[in-house]
Image (spheres, rainbow, N blue to C red):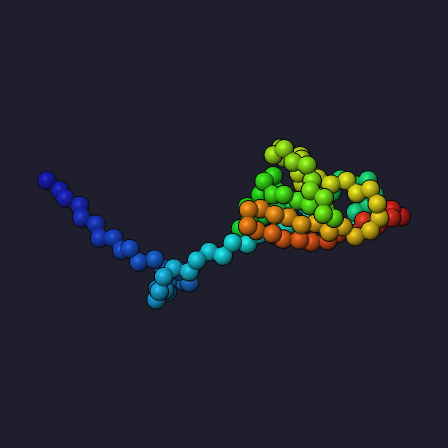
Length: 112
């Protein structure tokens, strides 16, 4: 009869094998909103907005507001994060997901 015995360590190592002297550091959530395709925007362009939480795309569940107006969303990949620019100028975008918020601006310029 053969018996295998294994000894297992419950110590977690990180930072190249160094043992941490206290509780494991908590993950800090990072929520970021931005243009899906950065670059020059013109009147009539469809502008796609993107949101990420810890590098995971959460655009379809994020509420976007452009210049204070909430974009219509129905949880499909094509609604809720699309905006068509109708005027020249600076646009302010606010993105909200649960308790996370981020904002950014983009400029719509005249086509040359």
